[in-house]
Length: 283
Ligand SMILES: Nc1ncnc2c1ncn2[C@@H]1O[C@H](COP(=O)(O)OP(=O)(O)OP(=O)(O)O)[C@@H](O)[C@H]1O
Ligand SMILES: [Mg+2]
Picture 1 (cartoon, rainbow, N blue to C red):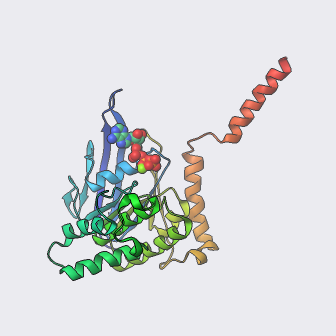
Picture 2: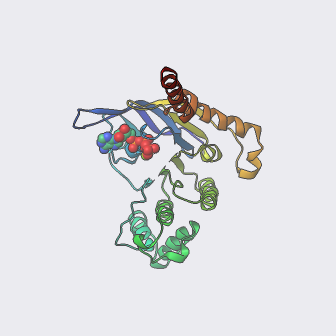
Picture 3: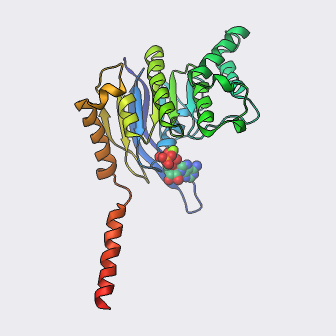
């Protein structure tokens, strides 16, 4: 890993709403090195997708900005591929054609027709979609659509891969398989990854650093955890690893103690039952 290649400086954003501007993010500062795998974790609605959209160039920060390889990011570009939280495939194109569209944009005429076909099929096979190449999005399940979205992003061989809960809609086995594939692909290509996740185990298994966000409004980075586990990582071996469990509990503590969002149901219950018993007593 070398010097910083992606830098977020004082990033803030306000959205116009009927009730006036809503400040979603404030003072987000982050330096990422080439080839680093960074996860963003935080409670629902804190601003994770917004951060990713700003790096993707889909949203413009209200304050501060993003610099990639010394150039300011102001618009989307093929060197930053996005896997969206909701697959976002074009409904009138098949799985194959959705990937093809992105690949053509990146590789243009530098691949022959045969090479192009081989590359598209290879990437769809990687996410175990080789059997449904010519199905349209409304003919496949939610998890399958998400996998096509992942294949599309990987096929672009982007410098920066931006993934918004890419494995959230998948069953546990497919999820584990794709996590392993992603680690292999990233080790091979050395691309930078920013991945949003709600899954603490996924964050620890995959990341070099876990960026933990505070609750909004005006969300920012609360803590950053360095995950210093040797690679390649093996999920079974890590299950009994003391360091792994230490990282895991650090993230859990951040989410459920420091940035606790919802009152535990048991607390609500006991408040209710003490109210009830009061009423009972009076009656
Ligand atoms: N275009 C928009 N206009 C107004 N408010 C917005 C817009 N986009 C996001 N927000 C608000 O900004 C905050 C952060 O939203 P964001 O989608 O980034 O959260 P998130 O952390 O990705 O949540 P989740 O985990 O549920 O996906 C929320 O309060 C959301 O309502
Ligand atoms: Mg989101």
